Length: 398
Image: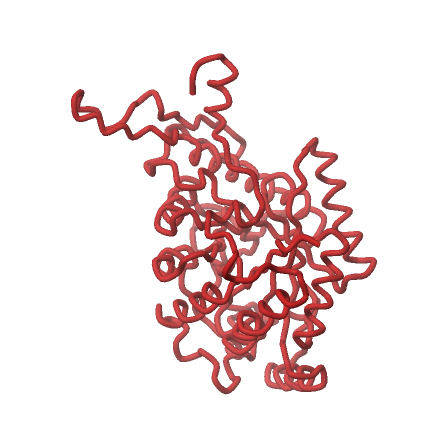
């Protein structure tokens, strides 16, 4: 079996469980500090995790049945893209994948912000693309009514993703020539305008950021339902799905992604990651007791349909390794794990799960992991600019 099992840790506040902030040793007092994020991210980097995603939203936190902020949960968040840029210099090999919504954000800002991260991190940026469907989020911007149908939001998101990709390609790798003799800093012919007219987005011109180390940072998208899966196959390099186990459901979800790739006429088989929420204990009984205590503190179980859009596993390192091995056997490229408690479960992922996967032959030792760009680490092909392809097709040297 390949040792390139992809392992991604999904970071959110004090953890994904609404009551995680009440756990002894939680980071609740430091959630708005750069030190908290740097500590958690550096631990993942040093111990061999491939990437972290950083959650974000235009809401300050979960809402209750009345639509008001749920005061029993963590309320307040830092901007994920800015956090990723801030912690990047402290890391060496870790991919940094902030969540950036496209619903109320100009594609120009999405593109240039992620390009900046790719430069700052020397080619380790990624993007978890997300839509923002609620009226509460729309009200913050005042430009459009909220509550758009999902199909409309995904159609808009497709256009934004296309524009972002064009802006990323708008500078050739060698556009900056620094020709002192002629006094030209750039070759204007190597900068291309991203001309796009769509139903939702109209953009004309080039990015202000030179082409980034990866050209195009890899795009992650959550395919937790049919319309989201179709969108993910259209725009993403890495697809996240939410199986309940390594059984029939997991196989069906993977088969659906492959089917959608065929329907889209794509000859690329994207890495598919199983996206799971985990609470890790020294025994299953201990883990289940800890989860029950968190649920009691929150006043409701944290499970699919009640706060979570994926399976919540109270598990051990040994059982988690077995599950990941089974998923790999089905054809999954790896997993994204959402730690219910930070730093308790995020630390267990880095300090215990990584070496256990190495022992099981599911990953290479941390010393031999690739330190190249994130695309390489994920097993993705290099991003070739559309303008380079066009030039080559016309028989003109690129």
